[in-house]
Length: 377
Image (tube, rainbow, N blue to C red; front, side):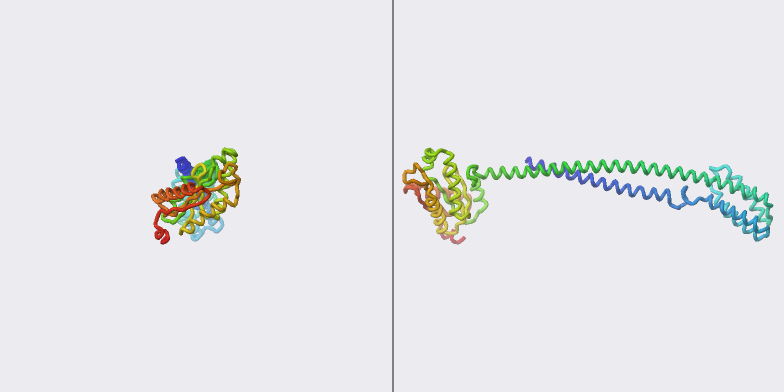
């Protein structure tokens, strides 16, 4: 349950960190999408305040018409050309913005109307009148240009300030989101390590719960679990009892008795070639579980265990029948099932006690199921 809580928190911190970095990317995307349209709006040549001004083009047309009238004489053709330039300049000059915001616009347009009428009648005014009729509108348009340039400068400065302020906000926000994401990622890593430790701790406790702390081999619970894991397989169960273990402990002490238990585990494992699983059932009693497809395999395993301990010649100062440690061994074949194991354990235990009744230091096998059923597996 504790591990599941840690795992949920681990996933939660991971999600928050990913959300933070996603928010950072969205903020950067928004910044990109915001800056480009704003730059386009302020600096595109689309006729706005910062584009090419109408007043500039109107002034140029009027200056061209003045040059035509002053330099090319007073013929009808010259008058028509000058009138055309004035019409172009007039059309660009006569807009609502200029009329509403600049006082010189209406008088200048009236002068241009009068000059246009004169040219339409074929009359070319004198240079003095031309100066009055054209130079006054040109001066007005120049004032408009300068004012528009000032406005453009103010708008540009305002845009630069807004952009700088916006970029500062984005920078601070990005840094905050980035640090927040790092914090969430750090919490995610911390929870991941906690989850790993919890998993390792759970596995360690599970392993300890299935191990005998003195010898390191499996315990009774591990034996039952292994039987359940191998359901339906033909197995051999061997029960082993140390002959006269209590007198051994009484004579040499419990530390030597513990060392004897560990040494016997090693000898039994070597005798069976490391192919069997060993369990300590309690005190001086051990169990062995091994694959067993025939009665010969079981009998050979029992004999190997007894002979290996005999060859080791471990001293036993209080053994009534000899100077060395001996074993009593009982074995049985069975099919790995919960009910069959109970019967198999009882049969192996009966075989073990038969050996004890015969003087110990030996082995005997029992039977649980018909041999033809075992041999057919």
